[in-house]
Amino acid sequence: MAGTEGLDSSASLEFTEDWFSRHMPTWDRILTSLKPRKILEIGSFEGRSACYLIEKCADFADGELSITCVDSWQGGREHQQGGMAEAKMTEVERRFDHNMRFALGRAARPVTFCKLKQNSCAALAGLITAGLSESFDLVYVDGSHEAPDVLSDAVMAFALLRVGGTLIFDDYVWSDQPPDKRDPSRMPKPAIDAFLNVYYRKLIPYEWVPLWQIYVRKIAA
Ligand SMILES: C[S@@+](CC[C@H](N)C(=O)[O-])C[C@H]1O[C@@H](n2cnc3c(N)ncnc32)[C@H](O)[C@@H]1O
Image 1 (cartoon, rainbow, N blue to C red):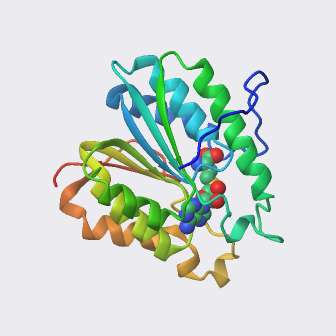
Image 2 (cartoon, rainbow, N blue to C red):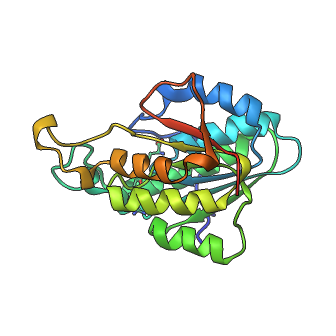
């Protein structure tokens, strides 16, 4: 676990990518009814979605708000040299630290923040081992886009989510390959479909949302 001590919080937020803002109207509706106090994010990058969650949820949380951000800050295949979203991950992590410092500093209430710089498989297994099963109100799965990783993220996210909590997957139909050459193991969709089929009786989909993200509520243990 690492902190953001010593970073400058006087400047403004620093982002180079925006994969999140277009989803905000949908998230606004879900968060307003869910009012999550305990949030887990898998895949944080520069912290754009995490900063939004802090700002939005600190506004209406009654009691303490906490957010746990899991990221290897190694990047996925798409962030490597020549990938479709090439990024220098040491700089991405520096911006994440800065942005979190800034967002936490201006939040409407104190927020407990936990940064887990780990592969998601190890981090989520650690949270389960630490006794945090069934404790999160909201889990956002936006880490690796490779199907085997998405599947293990989904299964462990489900274990960590409380009944009544909401699970959101980004990039349901994402691929970095041309349509006629797609390798299903390099896409989230086959893993999300497999997870939703296997957990069919324990989840209920939000029916009014667009398709790029998948939003389901846990209704049974
Ligand atoms: C699409 S970005 C997250 C974007 C962020 N949620 C936002 O809205 O700005 C995906 C992130 O997942 C991380 N990641 C990829 N594979 C991972 C893995 N197996 N374990 C942990 N993090 C991973 C990458 O380092 C990257 O920062």
